[in-house]
Length: 201
Image (cartoon, rainbow, N blue to C red; front, side):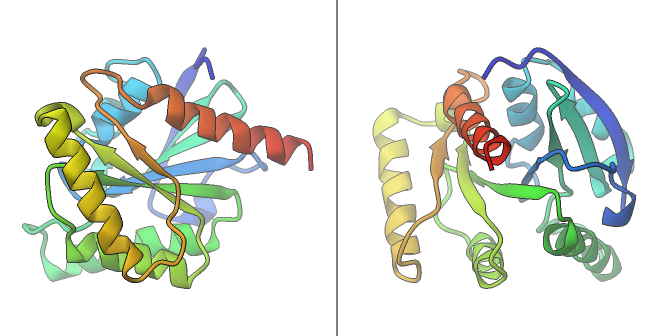
């Protein structure tokens, strides 16, 4: 897929105030410092697209970007902020869960995982929650450039083995590096294939 246009549309905290219409939405989410903004900018061929939603306060919002006038990329608030108070964590949880559960246009969630770390309970629990609620999702491993190719393969294999303990079939998995633009064609190609299937229904 060739990204010809990418435009910031709106930020808000309520899924009911998200853009009207029936364009498919692909939501990106992950723990803090997982590299979400860098990945979004890399996918969209823009240096500062996601920075629009990184002004003070906006990281706590649902951010919509219109891509090629045909689908929305949605930047969801991160989860697992260790420094956030209980009230803030509850607010974020409500924003995220209400969007994922009730937003009819949501087509797929891309869950970002830092490839340098071992499987984290908070990520595994989030996957389990999406699985229990029948939410289509894919896993995107980030920051592959931060370690050797051998180490990255080992980490991804360990993660897949951990998932196989509870998942009979794994969701699509993408390995990415925003610095080296690794995985860009695969992620965008996956979105393009889904969009084509939706149009042909």
